[in-house]
Image (cartoon, rainbow, N blue to C red):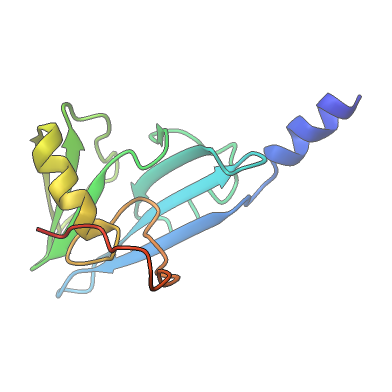
Length: 145
């Protein structure tokens, strides 16, 4: 009985949902949506969609990717660059008109060089985007180069 309660509470609608808006210079908007759930938020589904509410209802999981931080991304000059370690594990299902989408496969060293920048939202972003909560003064920042 307790197990059923915990399972349903971990899979409730809108559990820790985040949506990041990306807008082209021509006004087209897409969203990087992610939802985390579980006792420690260690379950995650993510997608990039024209719908800002995609994944708000966790049952709406078509065309999503599962796993923590499934890719990194950057958005500049109407180009969405998606970065993957070793292989592409997700492709957009929604079509874009003015936003160009590029997929990049990186080796471990290349990926973690970008990842260190994404941790501090320096030109690159994690999924979900890292919220800068500040570091303790005695803790070194991740290397950005």
